[in-house]
Image (cartoon, rainbow, N blue to C red):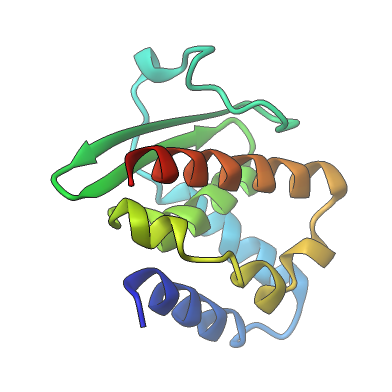
Length: 137
């Protein structure tokens, strides 16, 4: 099992501890609060993700044979979704990222429990991660 697949499995296991979606949302928001600081100079049009209702910026750089992502949002729940994506895809080889389907979306029920605009934003962030990974692979 790849590191990314393992990270997805661990995340799904963690979410099973919560009985309801209010607790799950709070956990996602708390994850977002733990994101590393995002430099102001990276908040450019070029790094902004289109398709998100709130503002989202994502920066990527190659670190040896792995891709390192940094991202931020001005919305708490979106920052949490970024933290979920970072946990699964950050600091992984590009080929591993490209070959890891986002099974956590269905496994966690995120697609069903996010508003359509949040879901679109999550898919836009995923698309950017996959685009970068495919370009770097």
